Image 1 (cartoon, one colour):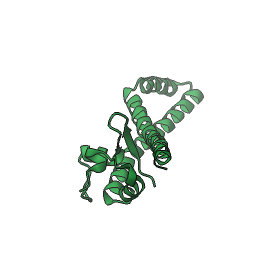
Image 2: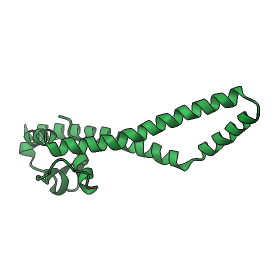
Image 3: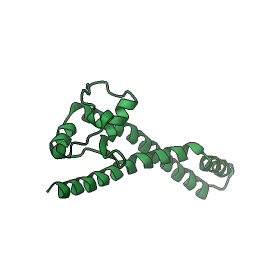
Length: 151
């Protein structure tokens, strides 16, 4: 089960991060999400937690929302990798060339270091990556607590 959830401590409800994000940004194109439990009202029927999570995890709505999430995360990672390769090449040129081209590369490297968009891309990638891990951890802890409570 790979369902990623957001647990609200105040409401004691669970929302699917992928589906909630996709609905908010109107990203659903192929699936119709009739059940609003994981996007609007929040799941709170703890007696049926395992069955409901499995159903949602296999739903077309969830699958499409998850693909949309991944599609947003991967291009950011690709841009960051390309940027890092560019910096490595520029550093190599600067270190090996001491003529006018080396000076131009040095100036370009200084401009790139001050490039604010890189910070935004790095932050976006970190947020996307970290939120998935945090959600998995919260989901596991909450399920362990609920199973202990119910048993």
